[in-house]
Image (cartoon, rainbow, N blue to C red; front, side, top):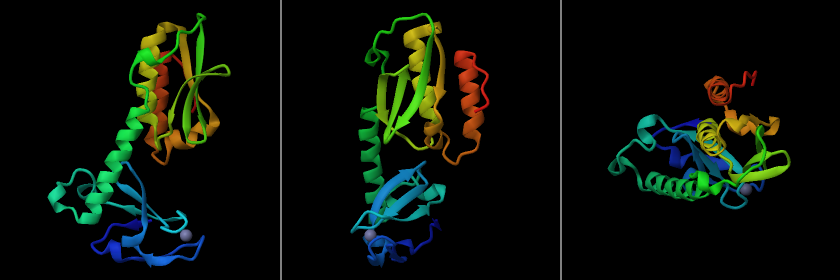
Length: 190
Ligand SMILES: [Zn+2]
């Protein structure tokens, strides 16, 4: 990781995958996480190069006039990604199917780049994975609760979904435990 500094665009990188060599200005921009971490990748092979950490005032909170052209471009790309992401997300109970049964034990799973909500083997909803998705978990859980009421007894995260669900944000674990308990009455250790 590189902490943001004035001349970060001049920093040199050599790609470990294909030996491309150049400066940050010419790299590809990946996703921006939590409006603070910007991924840089190789313009030749898309290999991961670095993660730039922006102080909060250089993130999305900054007024656009203060941003360099590169930062503005990165911001706009991120906003576009965010828009595309949101359009694929569950936003209404009408998007959920009717389900039979008095006891619904739902599962939050991840398959590749998709988050899947399942009951047994049946996928009832899927949307793009989000890093540190614990806030997303709560939004989806609330919609499931609204749709299926007290028949929903749990929305249990599978082991393989946990890396993206918690990310490296420690309080996420406690937050999720709280949501599960409040919405579904589940006491969990995860
Ligand atoms: Zn490369």
